[in-house]
Amino acid sequence: MRTLSIEVGFTNKIEEFIGHDGPKFSYTKQALGSELFVKSNDLLFNQGIDYLDITVVKWDDDPCFFQTNFSAEVPCDIFAASFYLLSRYEEYLPHVKDQYERFPASESLAYQHKFLDRPVIDVWAYKFREILSRHFESFGEEIRESNRKFNYISTIDIDNAYQYKHKGFTRSVGGILKDLIHFNIQNIWMRFLVVFNIRRDPYDMYKRLLMMKKKYGIKTIFFFLLGDYSTFDKNISPGNTSYKLLIKNIADYAEVGVHPSYFSMKNELKIKKEKEILEGIVNFPIKRSRQHYLRIEVPETYQHLVDLEISEEFSMGYASHYGFRASTCTPFYFYDLDFEIQTPLKVFPFAAMDATLKDYLNFTPKKAFNTMMRLAKEVRKVDGTFITIFHNESVGGSGRWRGWGRVYESLLVELSKVL
Image 1: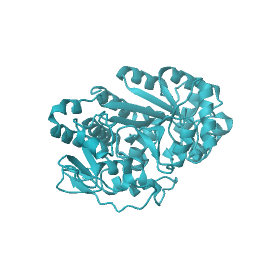
Image 2: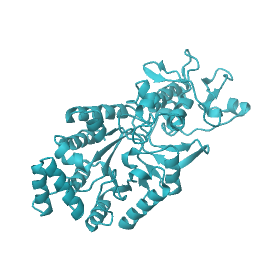
Image 3: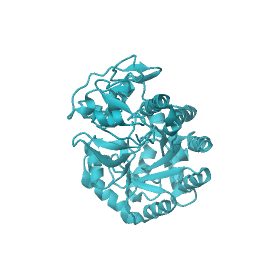
């Protein structure tokens, strides 16, 4: 079991099971004897996708479902429930999409039953470990031993590398005209100061981000948007020399990944092109990815990423709500229900994004910080991996992000104390 770092073996031979002297439990419809027994739901024994009638109940104070025997030590089939959540089974079923064609949080079981902000799969795993250690006292220490520890990964999305610099004549003139229409004289003045190198561009936070990475010892991954300009993709051209130099410089000091553009969700060729652009800039294979606008279509987007040999994916979360989309804070390998196989694509679920807290939930910077710390506390309880998304704009703390500049570093200060 990957979450608990316990090696397990499987057998469907009764005599082999009975003859085993070490810790063991049966997972079937009926107990074989007096052994530790978890009654199974049909889900893991079936193929295909069907609508499932799910009732969420309480296991002590924790939500669970696929209830089997309320008086049993494990009253729900936590293995089938974990599979349902990790495979994103509910995203294969008919659902209403949001305005950006995404699976919305409001359609999820976790949101509807108010456990989106808890990594319940990890909670179940830790509860099951305690049950195992009680049942097999002579192996108790061995069962409890784990190399698992709390980890924090900071991810930075570069949707717009600069606010004013390197935008080209047409976009710069367009920006000036827009500011004039809205009587935003301050923006026009700032654009002038930046273009003539009198002031630093408000989005140019890269030295500070790298400094904080080094100072606090935080693993940081930068995702670069390299798609063609569109209504939703407004970064500077990936052919811009300054942008290439920026990417090269960051790749020398931090890990980087591709940020496939808005219309790449169902378009493997777009992802391939943008991945190859980044590889051409940094001169090494790109293995990490996060979709722009978090637009993933399960399983199609993931199938494309597997074909393109992306091995780590960071889009598993919601834009409109914080929490754990797959109900876990442990990276996991995506299981493709279409082909009934575990893929080599490792999914890294994130817990919170700056734009979610500000734009969707209208949180103040203080409330956003406190929310992220509360989520981190939930992850620490199960020694999981806490992942956040920030943008270079929000770290800059100017314009619409005024007042947010200190949130990111405050988070790093606090989390570096417990790593």
